[in-house]
Length: 525
Image (tube, rainbow, N blue to C red):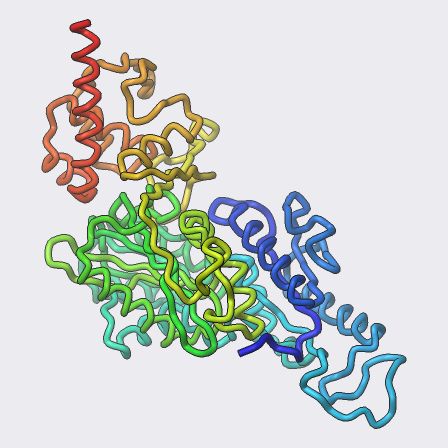
């Protein structure tokens, strides 16, 4: 399917200011999309409130608006751009010319570029929510502006918690036991029906788990439910059974108009459910599933993207798996280029945002060449023979009053990524890349500061301190796995405290065992 010839101008909504949960990943995707669309000859219009981005450089878009990303402002931009298209003599939708170059009796033609379209899937949750507000107010229909990449119905299905839950059940996929509430009283009724704490609260149409959390008792539940309802733009929260301790996975999926679907990258969270994926160490490709389990998850991902109706572009789909019995549930889906998409692009070399932009204007995956291989089309799934690890970077030292416990609300301010032949190599390189003064898990001779206490690098830390640091998710937990192993904890002991998969713990144990060998060699030298 060749590219669409009826589109004249593409309006891209950026992600706005850099905040926790929405950072330079969306500048990366927006910049790729601007370049890809200009290559295809389209006029590109960009609105972004953040001038400290690459995408707002003058060469990336034909016209850049540094304005607040609100429905009211974007509506004014649409009006202004339609006027500009008339001034340029672009024909209207009926085929007649818009502006001074009109010739009476021009025949209607869909092959003449004449449409202004909106691409909302590259600017994170900000762009998606703004586009949905414009749709609900009837602005897009009023001015004849089409939404491309994902239509309003698909966004609604992916973002509305209740609609998504019912859709998953209708296609035979499992979801956590849950309910949707719009008031505090409704939320209490749902909590009674589920019947046990802890409970997970997830607000609808928010980014980075904003307003969400884990309630361990009635008081915490009331507080989190009230906050979630306040922060959700549609005053809606999902209350679901706790999946704490389950393994968490993500799939980056792409689909085109011809219904070709590919998995770009599979990602496994080192930390179990209960820690936001943006705050968890993540590993690509998935390490601890059998091929059969992976294929089941792959098929489920394709079923989800088709059911939601994302016709073109990328989506991020998250799953949880019970390590005791293998039960797999769908947690959520982002019908847009997400934070994980940037990681998947860098991990595989597959430019998700660029391909998503080309799919949005009519191409199919088999028509787009792969930039890395230069031989195969984008319809070939990337396969990598190395391991990629992402470790989040926190800044709790700058905010001493912040709660350092990691929950379903994102708290990291950045991340490092490393590539290695093995998980061990990639993890060590990534920890070194954090720029926190460590050269890996330990063994670098530098002291450890825990509160007011300072310990030497090779000191054995108190068991009660290690137990406390392992049982509650925190920014330093991966380092305390090393301390635990050196203090005589077994892999099983650490698993029971953290629920981190035994395979990962065994890999870390091999690093620690080798550190002990090196230390022994040094002592004998």
